[in-house]
Image 1 (cartoon, rainbow, N blue to C red):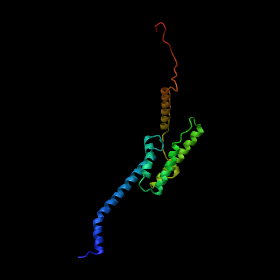
Image 2 (cartoon, rainbow, N blue to C red):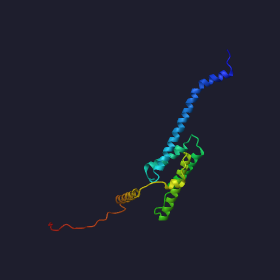
Image 3 (tube, one colour):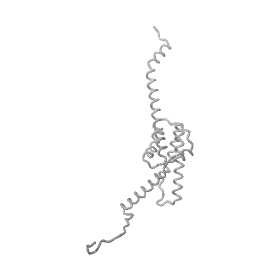
Image 4 (cartoon, one colour):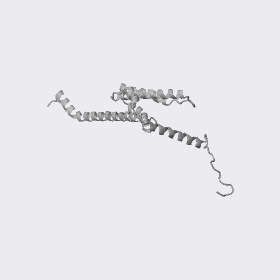
Length: 185
C-alpha cells in the first residue's frame, strides 16, 4: 500500500488541526484580553477626566505603556499614536513649575495639560474604535461645582495644617476674656 501525497496531506491535516485550533484559540484569547485591558484604561480615563488627581485616573495613565505599548508584541499604528500622545502628556505633567509661578503661567500650563489630555483621549478613542470628537471629549463631562468647592477647601485645610506642622505658619490667637485675678468670678 502506497500513500499518495494527498493521503499524506489529509493525515497531516488531521493530526495538526487540533494543535492549530488550540493556537488560534489562544491567539483569540490574548487579543480579547488585550482589548479588554485597553478598554478598561479608556473607560477609567473617561470616567475620571473631571478629577485627574483621582488615584484611579493616575493608575490608568500609568497602565498605558503596558496595555498599548508592551514590549515583545507588535503594535498597530493607532496604538503607536496612543503611546506617542501619552509620552507628550506625561512629559508635560512631569515639568516642574517654578517655585512661585504667576497666574498666567499656571493658566498656560493648565491649558496645555488639557490640550494634551484631550489629544490622548482622542487617540485612545480612535484606537478602540469609538467616534468621539475632540470637543465632546473636552466638554461632555459633568462635574458638580460643589465637588470643586470641596476639593478647594480640603486643599486649603491641608496646606494650613502642613504649614503649622512644618513651622512655616503659626496659629493666630486672640484673647477674648481674661480670667479674674483674685479668683472670683
